Amino acid sequence: GGRLRDVPTMIINFRLPWGVLLYYFRIPTKLLPFLRARHDPAFDKSKLPSMDDYTGSEKSAARYLMGDDAHRNETLKIIPVVVKGPWVCRSVAGGKPAIIATKMPAKYIYEPAASDEGKAEYLEVDLDIVASSAARGILSVVRPYTSILTMDLGFVIQGNQQDELPEQMLVGARLHSIDVLSCPPLPPMKDMFIHSVLEAARNIESVASMEEE
Image (tube, rainbow, N blue to C red; front, side):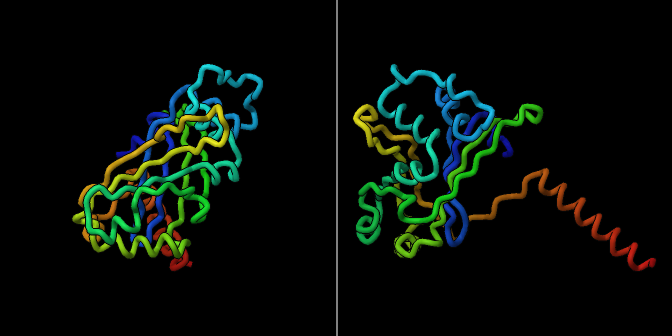
């Protein structure tokens, strides 16, 4: 509804062969300085808060947000679990964790806050499933059964240091009986529609000017 940036947001964008699947969730205020330290050249890293009282999972999340792309690729872990569905689906998504960015290309996009527009910052992780033959194979197995499938997808930042343990789920959601073959397309955003109309009007004016010449 155009309100995705009301609060600081992390977006996980699965780029599927037939569309996109978006996870989006709020970034806790205490972790925002670490995200800004990674992406804002003007941020004073000496003012980063101490992590002494952070839990292990909060420390791993802070280091993920502050880390470079290589660190992020090596620590974002997906956990797929088929709760209800055919055996063939359970066999390919049996709950085994996987470092997802080592299985397919990942791209990271950061957009700073735009206070004059009332928009908060966001970090987007684009996962290109189309580029992974293994992921495409799993999708080809699961897709015919999505309308009768209940599946949990969870994400964890892997704890590679002793003080980052125990791990804790970063975010999770349940997909229940989604018919990907009949899902309607998302409606265009209002500003995108206005932009398209203005662009079309400019093109018409340009053609009319050429005809007059």
